[in-house]
Image 1: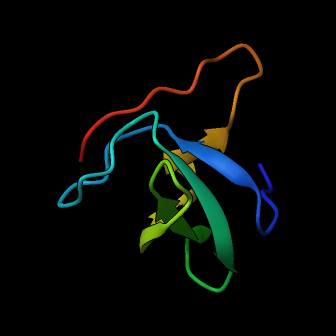
Image 2: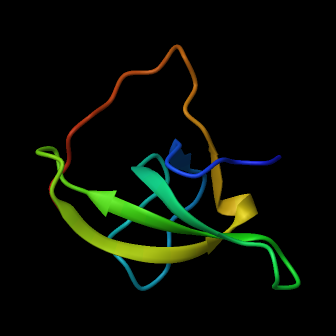
Length: 76
């Protein structure tokens, strides 16, 4: 699937070594097509919209946000 810049997405799996888990939201801020597998730089943010960090993930780690979902809050 092709994702566009600045699209909000949801993680499909935990990112090892980070506090980010399956179901967390992020925004795509860069696309890396020159590697063997397409990857994306994601910006993670808190509930106030403040940037927490950025991480590069493989395409299989993200998906579109489903329409019939509820956003939840959790502590890091």
